[in-house]
Length: 198
Image 1 (spheres, rainbow, N blue to C red):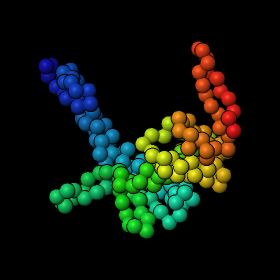
Image 2: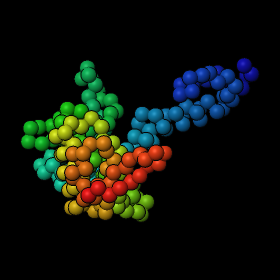
Image 3: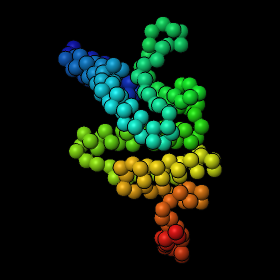
Image 4: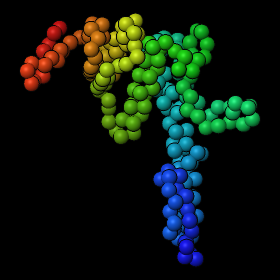
């Protein structure tokens, strides 16, 4: 190597970069620190979390009265010595606090919708816009009971929330039962045909 250059490992690129000027190495390290754990992304998340919890809670209360959702950005290490960065979603109801992964399909779907819509509202508000539509394509992992619960949740959001329209694309007839209007898409020859069913 030339005397003013350093061999530098870029972990995201999985390769050695041989010819980086030594003066640039410090800047690269500072940039990596700024965008690593505890850097700029962490600070952005920390400023959004309280607003996200407020928005998501407002929506979740409409969907499942008495339930709450919170987001934690740190958790204790397994050995109990110190904390690590995390993004844990916690749900609380009359049965106590649980990790979102421990919820039923309907509770998980309601929590997911509340967080997704809450985050969308924050982004829209900061951009000076409004969200009027929600589209869900093939909600997976739900049994018949959970699909019916999702249908009810979507009706609440469409009729009591600030959404003008909710569009759900699904192969399940029980989700169609929740809709104000149901369209069926079918193949006819080489074309897709859309028909109003109810």
